[in-house]
Amino acid sequence: MTTLSTKGQTVIPESIREQARLKTADKLDVGYINGPVVMRKRVPLTPSQGRALSIDTNVVASASFWRGKPFDCLAAWAQGRCRAFVSPQFLAEYGDTIEELGEA
Image (cartoon, rainbow, N blue to C red; front, side, top):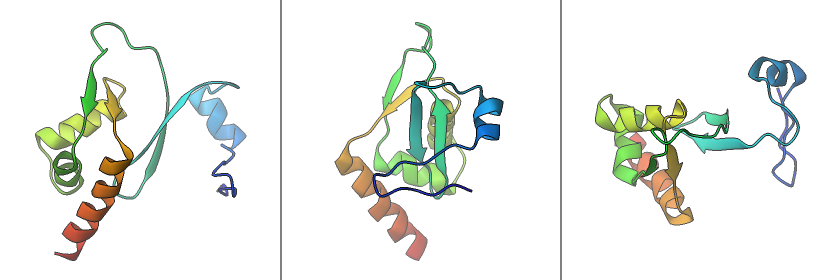
């Protein structure tokens, strides 16, 4: 277990850093997918991997509840096969939409 500081910082336990082969100054991508916060070591992408997705709210909501192409898009990001770009507006909309779907 770790604690989030007032500055939004946390410490990754040494055993996890060793397993993930994380070193000081490594860059980490951080994401949120319907509950879990995911941290992934950023690795340089090859030209064939150099794709970027702008994942809209419908894709995130669909992937959170069902399998299929939307889920495949998020899985590609989680596996490091592409990079995802989001805006603060998208993030706010994601939360609102998932909350509404959870109430349905």
